[in-house]
Each structure stands twice: as C-alpha cells, then as structure tokens.
Length: 475
Ligand code: NAP
Image 1 (cartoon, protein in one colour):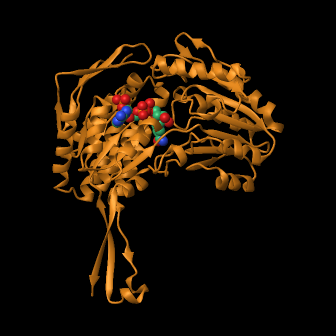
Image 2: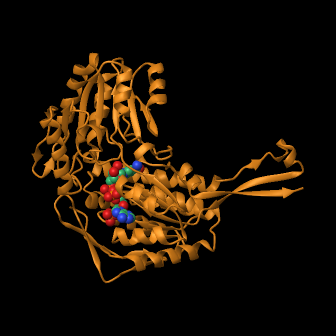
Image 3: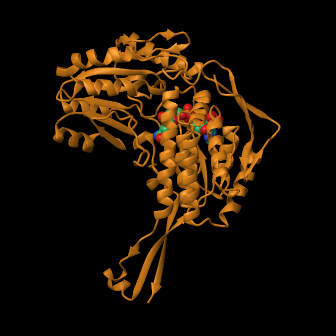
C-alpha cells in the first residue's frame, strides 16, 4: 500500500477530538495498518447531537450552504488521487473503481448544491374551492431537524456524500456514523467540509461501537430522521425501534438481468461481465442473476465467460486490477459456501469457484435450484448465475422471485418489451440496455420490498430531509 498510516480524531462540533481509545483500520487485502481512528461511544454521540442541535439554531442561508457544497466538490477534484487512495486502502477497492467513486462524490456534491439553491415550497390554489375564497396559501420546506446518518463500507465516500451533502442542502445538521471498516473516507470528507467553511456542529462524525451510537440516534428525540444504508437485518430493526422518527432505509438486492434473444448479446455480455464483478460484487446492485432467452443462450455464454476469465484479480492498489478481495475472510467463506451449496444441489460451475492466492476468482454458476441461497439471496461477492428461459413471462417471474426490489435490468431491441419490463419488474429502478448496476448520482435511487423504503439522489433526499409547512393568509 502506498498510503501512509494516518491517525484521525473524531469530528465533533468543528474539532478533531481524541478519546484515549483507538480503532485500528486494517487493509482487507493484506491486513496492513491503514490508520487509527479515535473510538467513540454513547458520550461522544450525545455530544455530537448537542452540537448539531446548537448549530441548527442559527440557520445557514441557502446561498452559503450551496457555496460550501460547491467548494467541497472542487476540493474533491483537486484531491481526487488522495481520496481514491484512502478508499482503496481501507475498503480494498481497486483503484480504478475508487477513482470512479471520487468522481461520483463530486457529482453528488454538485447536484446537492443545485438543490440548496432551488428547494422551494408551492403556491396552493386557494380559490379553487369556496372554502378557500379570500385566502392565499404557500408551503415552506422546513429542515426536518438533526439527521442521524449510518453508512456502509462498500462506497465509503460517495454513500456518505449522499447523506451529508443533501442534509446540508436541506439545512439539516448531521451526526454521521460511518462503517467501522471504512471511517477514513468519511473523516476525509469532514476535513473537506471544514476547509470549505462549514461552521461547527453542522457535521459531526462518530466512529465506534455501532450498538452504542445507534442507541443514541434511536433514543434521542432531537434526532428527527435516521438515514441508513446497509443490510436489511440492521436497517429494519432500527426502523422498528424508532417508530416516531422518519427512518429511511437503503438496503440490499439480488440483482436480476434479462437478456432477450433480440438484444445486442455481445454488448449485454460485456456490460454484465464488468458489472457482476466490480469491487468483487460488493455493490448493492451488482449483477447477480442473469436470465438469457434460450435462442441466445449459447451466444451469450460464449461472449460472457471469456470476458469474466480475462478480469485481472489482485492487489487493489494496482491500477490494472479489476477484482480485489472481499471485505473479510468470513465474507469470503460465506460466498464460497453459497457457491458450494449451489453446485452440490445441481448447479454447474462454469468458471471460478477457487482462490487465486487469498482472493476468490470471479465465479459463474449455471442454473442453480431456485431455493439455493445463491439463486435468491444477496450474494455480495464476485459470483453470478446464468440461466436460460423461454418466454418473457417466465423471465419476469424469475426476476421478481426475490424478496428484494432495488434495481433490475433488461436487454432488448423491442420497445414494447422494454416498456413491459419497466411496468412489471417490481423494483425501484429498471435499466434498459444497460446493466442494473448503473447509477448516476442525480437519479432517484432506492428500493421496494425488502430493499428499502426511500429514495436517495439529492433532489429526492432533500425532500425526505425537509417537512412541508402550510402558511395560510386571510386576505
Ligand atoms: P451493515 O453491516 O448493515 O452495516 C452498515 C452500517 O450499520 C455500518 O455503519 C454498521 O456499523 C452499522 N451498524 C451495524 N449494527 C448497527 C446497530 N445495531 N445500530 C446502528 N448501526 C449499526 O452493512 P454493510 O455490511 O456495511 O453493507 C452491506 C449491505 O449494505 C449490503 O446488504 C448492501 O446491499 C447494502 N447497501 C445498500 C445500498 C443502497 O443504496 N441500497 C448501498 C450500499 C450497500 P459497523 O461497521 O460499526 O458494524
């Protein structure tokens, strides 16, 4: 690793704070020490909520919020290489993918700045009813209050950006708890926000025991909204425990792709090969279940498998690497066990399923039984399935046969087929002639069913983070 070991305090009320205890951040690739971060708990979280609430008593005008957001985007551009190295070191994300994540975080900040300047309420047409005659009414978008944000390890910069940039755009102060494996990217962003002129208290970052920090965010009534990205097991529990707060959940998926026989099969194969294995499949919308119409099945396989086998597996710090390690050995063991189960129960191993040194090779399993974990649950690893189908009805049923509903994709040249898929695939988003791993940061992004209950993307997030207040004037 080329990144120097760094020590970081927590970011509380505009200051870097040490606690006397340290959390070591180690590389998932070679276990080398990447950095140490002050370890916080309930006390630091309460302090963070105090600071956030105090900050919000002196609202920042929209133009100042927008200027700060634009300055952070600029700083991310200037320090893009450093930011990518931090992501790559702590998450073991290949540099290629880490650089894309930094560019996307810039975009998230840029879009959030637009929202800060344009977020507005509505004029209510009061004379549309007799009761409203002689009255005028408008709605104001009022910041909801202190936002508690909890983020996962897999996009440690851009998924933090998707919470803290819209919150500032909406006029809300934040208490952020990043994943313990990847706190350095979040603290890097905090540094950029402070350098950009963010006054104390508007962003506070607490790293440490998830249970202690989570408990304060759930129990403290001043935290009015919790925005959570991560696993369903944690997310739905948080929501259950905070029935009087708004709790926005961005959770997992078992991402399906349908390839119709009329599609550009080579293009579909190329996009699926790239997007099933990027960051070793550790994206919530990584291509996982590929269904190909029978007439095109062999052609797809012939175009897909050589591309999978050509992916470079290795050190995430190497600019040529496509696929690095999983976040932990436990995760690697779990994914391997799922592959073994699928194969033992009749699935055919087409490639992979073995280790290259310590790393799991990109793996493809053909037609595992529908009730194996690989076929119906979120793999979150460098593995996908391939299965033929005959009719579109059958493909849509297979794609929908999951408890998840984040994004799905279809490749076809037929407009009617594309529109039908858009209407019938029960997912928050459907991509046509693009892998469902695609996301541009201004898009509304979020799932249905077990995948969540909200949408991110700055224009949608600022609406979640504000409340609509009605003002009626008697003329
Ligand atoms: P995770 O284990 O649920 O962790 C997510 C965050 O929750 C971490 O910061 C974690 O802290 C924290 N946490 C754990 N237990 C908690 C508790 N009791 N109270 C409060 N916070 C708690 O998920 P992950 O493994 O990092 O991320 C992978 C999952 O995220 C996958 O399912 C993936 O699909 C999903 N994801 C969804 C999206 C989306 O936008 N829909 C995007 C990316 C990822 P610690 O790190 O300290 O445990």
